[in-house]
Length: 133
Image (cartoon, rainbow, N blue to C red):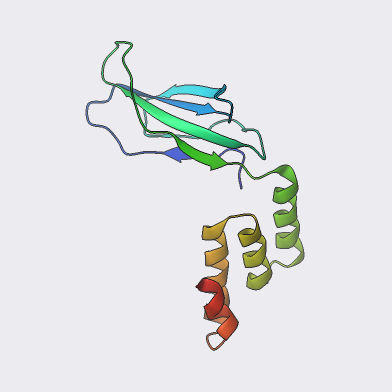
């Protein structure tokens, strides 16, 4: 949901530094940042775009980088983000409505969290059980 997602990866023994690079669907560089830790939170990224990120590791001050495989992600569009915020604002205690809103935009972890809360508050509900499957 956030346009400032947190990137985190496994530490690499003896790593001198890491380089995070984010590309758009055309392969154009959107962001490049060097860090010493194994996590990074960027400034806002473009909403509604599928992006790819890679992390590189360098073991000394040389120019050689070992890079990870690319991984795709998407920052929710402004319209979809507003829809979820509106649902949270108008129906803050409706685990069903929030779960459906999250699921409709592909936010499966958030939807599952809401469906689990729905099942917990309605343990005999067949709908709550179905939604988690």
